Length: 268
Image (tube, rainbow, N blue to C red; front, top):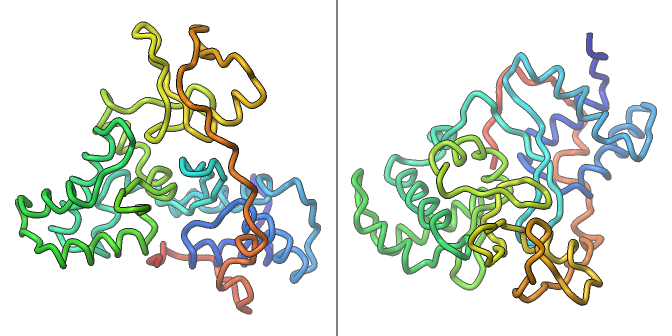
C-alpha cells in the first residue's frame, strides 16, 4: 500500500495541474517549497520518490507525472499526462477539428523530416488542403501561435519542432502511427527527432544533439557508440545550465489550498 499524500504532495500536484509542465529545476524548487511550507520532511535528492507517492494516488485517475528531456537543450522536465488518452484526441476540448487536422499534418512533416522540424511555409501549404475546413494564412498563423503558447510546439526562426510536452504526452501515439519512422536515441533511449545519425548504412543509429554533446565531450576522435565508425558530424557545445530566473517557482505554487483532483483540469 502506498504512503498517503500529505499537504506538501497535494500542493505540488495542484501546481502541476495548473502548469502542465515544469522544468526539473522548477520541480526541485517546488519540492523544497511545498515541504517547507507544510513542515514536511525534505530531502533534496528524493524528488522522484516524492513524485512516486503522488503517482501512486493518481493511478485511479489515469494520470501520471512523467519525466522527459528537451531535444533543444537536453534539460529535463516533468509533465502531468493523461494516460488514457494516447492520441491527438486529448487536445479536442481546446481546438476545432480543422486545427487538430493542422496539428496532425504538422506532426507528419516534423517526423518525416531529416531535421526534426517543419518550416512555416510547408505548414501554411498544408493548411490550404485540409479535409475538414481550410484555414487562411492569418488563421493558420494564429493557430500555430496557439500551439506554441500551449506548449505543443516550439518555434525558432520560422521552424517548428515538437515540444517536450508533446513528445512526453504523445509518445505512445507517435510510436504507433510512425513506427517505421520513429527512432530512439542510442544514448538516452527517448524518441529522437532533432538528432545526428551514424552514416554507416549498416548501423544508422540516432543520437540527440544534447546527447551528442555530452557523449563526445573531450573526445578528439569521436566514434559511433554502436559500430565504432568515425562520427563525421559537428559536435555541438553543451548548453549552459538554466538561468536563475528559470528556476523560480512555477505559478500557483503559493496558493493556500491544494485539493486532490477528481478529474484532470484544462491546462493553459
